[in-house]
Each structure stands twice: as C-alpha cells, then as structure tokens.
Length: 370
Image (cartoon, rainbow, N blue to C red; front, side, top):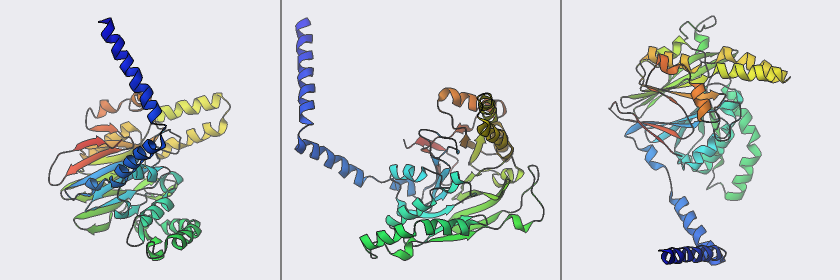
C-alpha cells in the first residue's frame, strides 16, 4: 500500500512540475489565451432578450456608501427584445458588460432622480451602447431637469466622441447616433401643493407603450429631491415595479397593485443610527450629521415589506441598500423584523440577481448571473 501511495505522489509531483514548466512556454501561453478569448467573444446573454418573459436584473444594489462588490443604483428590465435601465449608478455599466448583455439592444434609460449614485454612469451607458451598435440616439426619461443632466453628460463626453469618430470612422460610429434624447416626465406639476407620505401622489403617466410593453411613471416622495419617480413595467401578463428612492408612500402601493415583483429601496435605520453614534463618539461629526439626516427620506426593510403586503405583491426585493451589508451576519441584522410582517415572498437583493417572469404565467424563477 505504501509503495502505491509513493508512486501516486511521485506521479502527482511530476504532473505539477511539468504543468508549471509548460505554462512558461510562450506558444502554450498563446494557445490558452486564444481559447479563452474565442470563448469570451462568442459569449453573449442573448437569452435574456427572448420575448417569452419579463426579466428583472439587479445591476446595482448599493447606496452612496462604499461596498467592495455592489455597484450603485441600477435595475435592468428585459422585454420585447430590448432592455430598459432604471438608473445608472457608479459601477453599473461594468456589471452589465461582464454579464455580456447585448449593449446595442438598449431601449432607454429611465432615471428616478438626479442624486449622483443614480446618474453617474449615464455617459458610459451612452458611449458603450453607441459603440456596440445602438442605431440612434439614446432616449433618457426622467423628471423635469433631465434635459440639463443629459446636456451636461453630452458636453463632458463631447471630445471623447470626436476622438472615437476620428479614429474608427463615421461609418462604424455615426456621430448622430452618439447623442442622447432627454424626455422630461412632468407629474408633480399637475397637482398643486406638496405631496405627503400618507397622501396619494399625482400621476401616473404612461411613458412607453409598444410591442406589448407598457412603462408607467409615478411620483414618489424623496424630498428635498423633487420631483422623483418610480416606474412600473407591464408585459404579456406580468409586471414589475422599481421604486427609486422614497419614503413609505401610498402612491407606491397604488402603482404596485397586483405586481409580480416590487424592487423597493430599503435603508436599515437601526444600523444607520449605530453608525451615527459611533461616528459621534469618534469625533467624526460630519459623518454623524449625514447619518442623522438620511432616515427621513428613505424606507426601512420592514416598511417596504408593509408596502408589498398592501399592494398584494408576490415578491418584494430590497435594493439601494443603506448601508450595503458587507457579510451574511450583517444581512441578518439588516432585515430584522421583516419576517414578522411578511413571513415569505421577500429577498435581500444582490448584484446579478435575475428574476424571470414567464409570459402568461404566475411562475417566478430566480437565479444569479454571478
């Protein structure tokens, strides 16, 4: 037996040494790289664009606070052979690119509001989808003020666009297609006076209705950020709602009535308070002040679960997590109390979470692209 083990160990050592030597051979290195690149170039997430389902992909689940793996606010919705992006937070384009999303098939960007963690990669989305073959200007929906935001990004990228056209040629990269088209959505101005956390907000407004896909914008309350919006997607008997940033609000309950999936922002105020107290004790008064300010314009996980209950939603997914939990232990702390008000039908979102809603069905299929 010992002789057999001796020979097995000897063979394993020879294989390890031989492999270590072989990977130093340039020809072998090139061959490995060629195979990997060939597979990568052929790879594409075209299956997400099949017209047999409404699909919701979380491409950014963090808030402005840092996290090593979560991008900032971004939710992609796939329907009618295209994909629609709600908010373009930092790191979100990189996420979609790594998942091989066919960038040229973008339908539009839908901004909920203009905080930096929701808009910072608008320029990259425009550039990358144009380079990937987007046939015309990128439509960007958003509250009044979206024209100013779009104009700013276009000016910031103007020299970059010129360089790329000069380098690759206008036939490959037509400059006319590099533009963005801002489409303001006026909702709050239709009703006088401020909205309240308990009142019914004005709206909703249908902003897209083609190919069986209807997208409806509705008002939310994120004051002093105003106006701010959420979006509902209806496609082939299935529906998904993305709230953007808001307090617990009747307009969200109304917009999400009977939806299959509700992607709702969720801020763990008990953890935010602990950060505030720790910062104050450490003399980090600026951090303490900010942590003291933010609870009044966000929704807690428990409140988001209550919204889902009131709306009769099948699944609520928590996103825009503040602070984004760094590990499983903190995740448990984060959702404390949720199961008491909603024992099932909820999830803590993570980047790469894909929810598939087959057409004309009540099935909800969940997997992670990572």
